[in-house]
Amino acid sequence: MDVYLPIANLAVDGFVIVGLGLVTGMLSGLFGVGGGFLTTPLLIFYGIPPTVAAASAASQVTGASVSGVFAHSRNDGVDYQMGAVTVAGGMLGALIGAVIFNLLRNIGQIDVVINVLYVILLSSIGGLMAREALQSLWPERFGGSGQRSAKRRHHPMVASLPYRWRFYRSGLYISPLGPLILGVVVGILTMLMGVGGGFIMVPAMLYILGMSAKVVVGTSLFNILFITMLVTMVHAFTTRAVDIVLAGLLLVGSVTGAQLGTKVAQFAKPEHLRLVLAMVVLTIALYMAFGLGVRPNEVYSVVPL
Image (cartoon, rainbow, N blue to C red; front, side, top):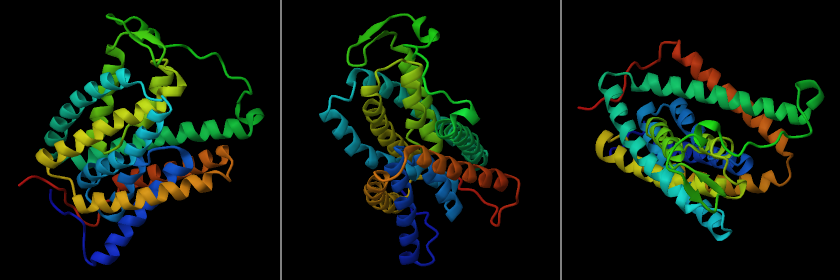
């Protein structure tokens, strides 16, 4: 593992990185999101190469997931059988992602691909969150409804898959191929983007697999814990893009920020918090999209020697 921090002044740079971790940790505590999908863009803005930012952010997500898994496990909020299937898929996805990562880096396109993926991802998440928040705050103006439609148990495509298993804690009788494929997709995204994948895993578990809401968050964290751990090791030994100093500073900041964010969230209205987060996410997406069309100050990429 090499050190890629643009260290002109170690004390100043270290303070800034801890501050970035503090911001993403506060977002985690405030909004109930992992914060990983914002860590990488913020690091890129600071001047960390996208490859290093994505690889190092995964280790931060690993550390932040540990306490969450333990907390949900004490309340029987983790379906370990479902988690084992998604972790198996995630491991396969991480290996596929490593091949894609190295291929794109060897041809000098990995930085562009990471930025494009983040623009698409953040735009989608920000748009959905903004619509949900606006419908909650002003239902008569934005087409919201006070009554939720009946939740479908699982998607018809999942119901059509063969070899069904019983997942007792999730209350499901479905094929393991559905969660396995979901795990593969999340594993690839984690490898390429340094995200935990909870923003995909949680809604997919609810609305595609039809899992019980009681175990969704805990099971997602269980999956994220092992996949980001594997992704960090794969990056460390194959792409060599993990900056251990950067990851450690991020973790220190995020742990502290999560505690602060949780306390602040107790006094704020959830709909207002979601709308603020949506605006933050959309602003970052627009800034990154703008950056894709502007010549950078330093035209370079991290490539293997």
